[in-house]
Image (cartoon, rainbow, N blue to C red; front, side, top):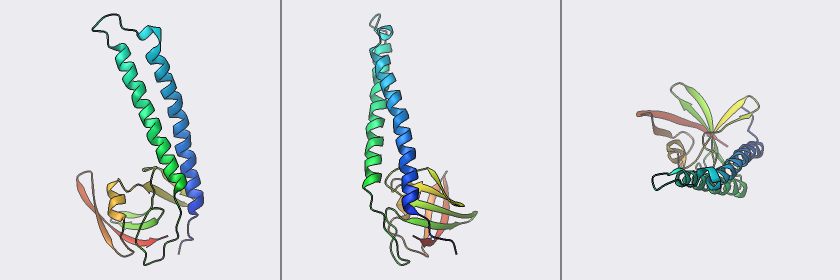
Length: 163
C-alpha cells in the first residue's frame, strides 16, 4: 500500500509553476505591447498591417495573462479535502487509475492541466474538469470504470482508489 500523497505540497508546486509561467507571460505581454507601439511598426500605407498585427499579438498576450491570473486565484482559493473510499471524486481528489497499459495518478484541479508533479517516487498528472479525463472522473467512485476518447480511440480505466 502506497503512503498518501501530500496534497498541500503538490498544490504549492503547481502554484509555483503557474506563477513562473505568469511571470514569463507578463514579460512577453509587455514586450509585445512595446513592440506594437514602437515607431518601427507604424503603418507606411493602407496595406501595411504591421501595427495592426502587433496590437493583436499584444492583446492576445494580455488575454492569456488574465486567464492565468484567474487560474492561479482559483487554485489558491481551492479547499483541499480528504476523500473517504466511498466519496465521489471532486476537485482536489487524487485518483489512482488502472489502465490497459499500467497505472497512473491524476489530481483533479481547477487549473494547471497537463502538469506533471513529482511527490516522492510518484508522478501525479494534473487534470481539469474541462479535460475529457477530468469530466469523466467527476462524481465517480472507487471501482467505477470510465471511458475517455483519446486520439480518436476509446480508452478504459478503473478507479482503484481516491485520496
